[in-house]
Image (cartoon, rainbow, N blue to C red; front, side, top):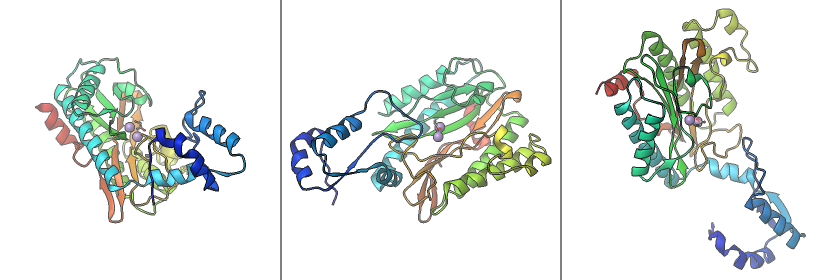
Length: 321
Ligand code: GLY
Ligand code: MN
Ligand code: MN
């Protein structure tokens, strides 16, 4: 049975708990993408326990926590749906305010305003990247003008009750995709749709990503960005698409934007994964990424972002208003 208490109660109950327990599971920061110089609370706590109760058995909590955090219950999924809904509201405001000449921080201001009004927060520093800035993967200066004829890539998520959304949309600043922009956009959209369909229970993350790379190779061939010789040389270690699609396909999402989860899956009911293929062509000033959040269920993938406009015609219509 789960028994949950406030952290502030711990000193009062700790000694009694220690006297009746043999094995203690302790948390430590094992996140592959973050480390810290300052000693965190978890580590202080571990030192204190080890010195006061040296004869207990201590174990790493992280392997268990990864399993537990990856699987969301229905309450958690509801909070994530709300985070997506708030993000959608912000993106719709951006669509109504976007025009040539606006600075990248102006869409950001629309997003912050709408999130605040809906009692959400920014889950992470948003990327608002016009034109070639969209090819800089972790761009977040957000201080350049959005030019006529350029696309603007917006990677943003609200958090609600500490649960994060993580979405990316790419819009034409003047309201119309050029034929080339539309062709690249539709290629990314196809890879997104097929990868969402592949976000199924039992799938290993390695296979999930690899399938998207193979599909991306074919799309890049059609776009004239790769040659058949380059595609023929493709290997899992050196995927041909890497020059234009150089990041992962997605990650677990929840209390963290990059949430804890077993590193290779397999995907299981209750997992929420981002799916975020992209094509970045700096020499053409085009960077396009599309990112949705997907709940894995026994009956297949459920797209939590299904209501967020993504089809190119739909986006042009919204921008025309
Ligand atoms: N916004 C961070 C990511 O897409 O992973
Ligand atoms: Mn993102
Ligand atoms: Mn993401």
